[in-house]
Length: 86
Image (cartoon, rainbow, N blue to C red; front, top):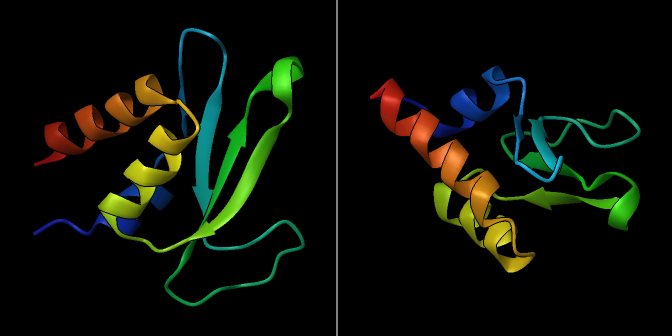
């Protein structure tokens, strides 16, 4: 069985057609470790800036975080890559 958290951390990130990018890290902006949890970093370029969010490393939490800010294409790319890994 694959590990969702390890999968997210092993990827270099995803980008959508608008140039929005998302990456995941086990450390926050100032380098603080957070155990088994994740940091989500969303860069929306010059349009809106972006966000960084400490999230639970569960698939549903990642989905909610991205869909909650309208990043459907990014979520679909992550899910597609995950499904290809299986």
